[in-house]
Image (cartoon, rainbow, N blue to C red):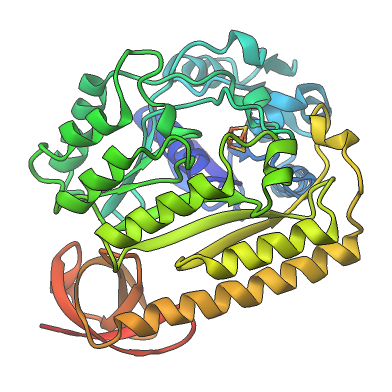
Length: 428
Ligand code: SF4
């Protein structure tokens, strides 16, 4: 039996796509082995969000090549799309491709013996097709891709060059996918994409209509919205989440900066007033909602005064978590020309400030919930005699392992924090 090993870098969308690619290999009779083992085929789904992500991709290829110099190494994902020739030149790489559909995978498997290196990426302005994907995580919750690409072209971001223009399947097609996930026993679906609020642009539908339709599918008891741009998170969506029991009280809303001048410079499509309105509406209608935000730290053009404004703004928001990433210069983006440039030391100092705000905000959020009753979907993994799950409002919790709880939604009471991340609960 031929073996294949997968390595995924980057976002949840990449994980969903790797999962879909792995199913194509399994259908062809392959056995999946860990990436740390010798395999006949290695598939790297790469990321290019920072220069560090590119380096990790090169390291993964080198590791695969050293494990089996005769293996077929296949590289897909954003790094492959943006730098196909650089990737194709890495030792052992046989295929560099951009479209992860079944036909492409079949073609690669069928031509595995060839000596040549194949590059089949698509220019971003020609990427028109939507390739469906989903991952099943630990078989209790699934990440479903409902949208791909982005039309926003923020000044620091290469994603639109790697993934092309915004596109999506129809609501009817998404419903069919969700029905199949329900038939497979999934209880929760995380609705994912690059810029999911843009769902419907290519089918004349809306993201809110998608949500209203998906919640009618029997079997799936929980839906979460992945990261959604603040200007696309309509009041109607927030009101729907507040009124619909199947929609989890959990939002992930990129902010990037709390300074209006910088937001404008980097091409974001909202200001702090709009952002504050969204956060306040969520908290007014759903006081216990989890709100995670994204911040980019040290982007070219971010002066110390601008960073101070971000700190003040973030401190003033009722949020639960901050996903921060340090800016990394990306070829072909407008931000390369912005000044002042932030030194590596300044970036680290700013990152440290944001990290401590995040830790405080998250602790405060969790502490507010201690003593309350919430619903939890328990997962299958066992670690240190414990099993884990997330509350509806995205607090990680643990109980002593009990197999009968796997993939069950239970009412629990939050007792005490085991550490910064996890809360001990009792089943009610
Ligand atoms: S919205 Fe901006 S940051 Fe997000 S993927 Fe699109 S261009 Fe990149």
